[in-house]
Image 1 (cartoon, rainbow, N blue to C red):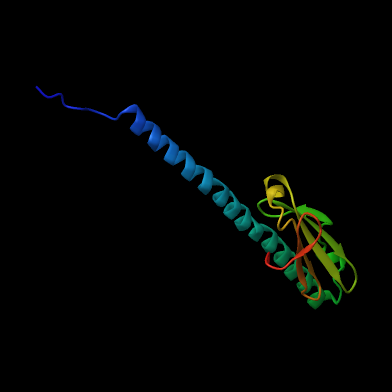
Image 2: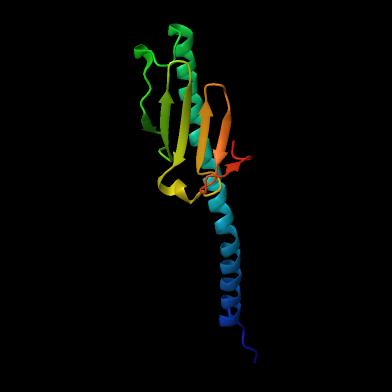
Length: 134
């Protein structure tokens, strides 16, 4: 008489668990890095939107700091992954987005700047300029 085997052996099950563990160890950090990179759009959107409002102010009133079109000195980006600070003068401005909360783990692009000349810059957590964040 032959016995009919049913189910999986413990060795087969442990092999599958090991393979899934290895794949997860490789895929999870890559996924998290991709998510952090996609959150950078939150800073770019906030800086561009604020710059556009300031340019409208210059067009309408002749200065960036006119009382009819104020911009808060600090505020959060739309998804709150960045804190935006605005340094607005009569004929110039500098906007800075600094990572906060969960986005602090994005050490490669921790801070973005945009000024009234349209100059864009990004910096890592050490303050060094980075070329590929924008």
